[in-house]
Length: 475
Image (tube, rainbow, N blue to C red; front, side, top):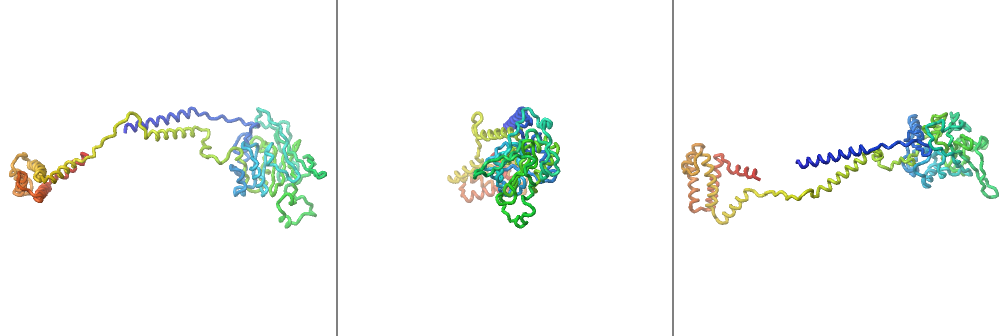
């Protein structure tokens, strides 16, 4: 027991030392300073470049919002059927592959709304719309040391942008304050000349023909009846909706916010994520523009967090304790347990002999002697062994010496008990005569032994039970 206590105390001390060393060696990682060179546009980020303020505002305002942490390929399943608007903000930590872009555009063609808020989005996510090409111009790269929380430096030299026309996306928006790093959106149109497609850029300015995204490109006179409108196929080639992009707001060299049809859905492109970031959403009517852009389609609004590095494929418990010494402590505890299990079956110290347990019974000798006497037909010897023990008990009970005569022993036993003297004396005489050489049969020896045991029980001596109890205690 003492050895086990020493082992337990040693293990406790080792574990305590490991915990103390991990606690002392743990250094809380320094929070990286927010910068426009490597922004974190995640809805989990409460810094200047994050979008947590917008997400929390939408959630508390009663809109159905969610963080999409699964691969975008699941948009084609039941999970995608519940999503009405899919939002992708800023540059992604995980690059978007060609298959993922096809999955997103396939979901848009079935009626989804894709909102892209970025200065340099993946060109696979901006497909052609009919004869129109949409692409952002290279923005001004932010200088080093610029604090994204400093709205004055972020918008230095930039005038407020007014909506190009009243639409659902610019409702209740008087002016928007983008950053000086917004990327102008360029739109070009392909025109057939001599059976060759020649790209002719069309400037995006106030004179550009624009319309509301809910309007049909038809006059009241030739507008198709409602029945024909419902039966029209949902494709860009046969639908009455123009594939031309709708410009909702312009900056000096191009568009700031546009949207266009893609299949049965729409793609909305905002070229400055600063408008929806925590640092810029408070300026002018940036918040109202963000709300109009995200809530223009009824249903669940899902923010892409999978490509922001917050995929749900990892262990939630490990992610929760990431950056803390808990995982290191658990690993060290597992090593200690494995070491104990491995060394449990190995010898530690000098070899010791196994404990020898005497499994023999004290009655084995008696059984062996009885068998030998029975085979040698030494009945007088067996009776002598039993009678000598009974005589010793009777002398102790009578209070006389062992060598006293049987008459005296019988008288004293009769005086102390209810037995008569004659039967006791006669039994003792018969046993002594058999021991001294009188012929003795097996039946007669058994009868004498039975009478001796009966005498013991009548006197309450219980020699047999006492011997059994002593034998059990000696084992």
